[in-house]
Structures are given as structure tokens and as C-alpha cells.
Image (tube, rainbow, N blue to C red; front, side):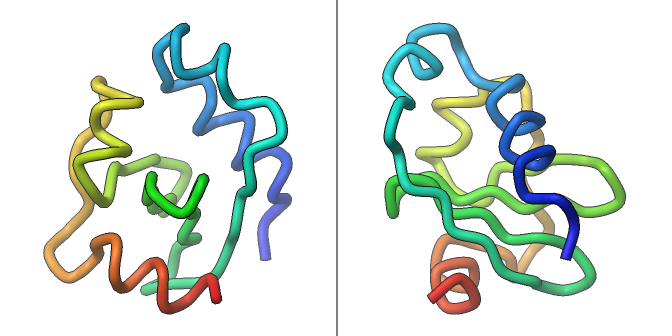
Amino acid sequence: MADNSKIKESIEATMTEFVKAHLKGMKYQYGTLKGGIAVLIRDTEAYWVKNGKIYAANGFAKMCSPGLSYSESGIDYYTIKKVVE
């Protein structure tokens, strides 16, 4: 699996300053999904990283990282939650 600390930093770089200010101590979970990396933060924000591009997999992630595109069809909170458990 890719270096999770680099994935975490990359995702955090897409977040609003308000969200970044409240991340301390938040739980990050990782898993593999469809050739990419699934990331679940705080059990609410779902992200998917593939080929170096970060996608929001649910509305919570999109609110935290408004500049991201949504992930492809079939990759959502539920599929990410399943692979990170």
C-alpha cells in the first residue's frame, strides 16, 4: 500500500482552513479499492485516491474539500467503509 502519511497530507491539502483547524487527533482508516486507496476520516468523510488524484466519495468529503471532483460511480461511503474495516 502507498505511504499513508503522504496520502493523508495530500487529502488535508485539499481541505478548507476551517476543517484543517479541527483535524487534530482524527482517525484515518485506509484500504484498497478498485486500483486505488480508500480513506475514511472520522467515520464520515470518504475519499478515494487513484493515480495520484484525490476524489470525494461522499457529500461530507465534498464539503470539507470543495475543489475535488466526485469519485466514479460505485465508489461511495458504503464501499469505502466496507474496505477500511
